[in-house]
Length: 238
Image (cartoon, rainbow, N blue to C red; front, side, top):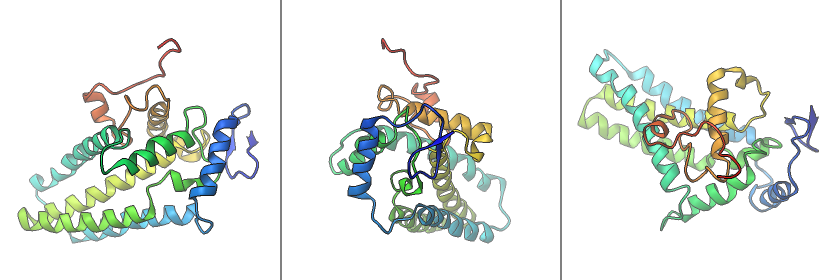
């Protein structure tokens, strides 16, 4: 193994960054990542935004009926649909009023992480890997508000399960997405499922596929249903 200079992560011999990618990463860090930023704190806040509402909602569940438990698979399917739709139609297309999301994702994230250079150099690179810290806090507050509406419209348990599953899916997305950009020999990638999802997402970072294939991150259900599931890179002639 060899290390990039100043890196916390290892890269296999022969996988050093191209000059273009290295130059872009240096420019991005200088322009966008604040001096005070710490990737460990970003990750910890993300975990807190998931665990706190999840644990609270879970502790309030009582006498859950089988029909109410159907909220769990429904939210898993909805989460897959939501991510697929957002990823395909917002993050990879410059839509009016949402262009900033396109710029951050397609023009920055996909240039910082390529198929060949899919790993961070250090934990400060989590800045462009995880959602902004404010996003996690905002999502938790919005989900809690929606959960209260579900409580009044259906039942307490359904509202609690809705909130629990919404923030849990967000947490799973962040976990899998971060794992998808960790070094190939990271301990968590010993899990076959995470390794498979990492390759699924890595293929999405091929410029020939990024606007067409592998939009799901956690559960590739709608990639499969909508014909956007890619198992390998296209040949050079495609």
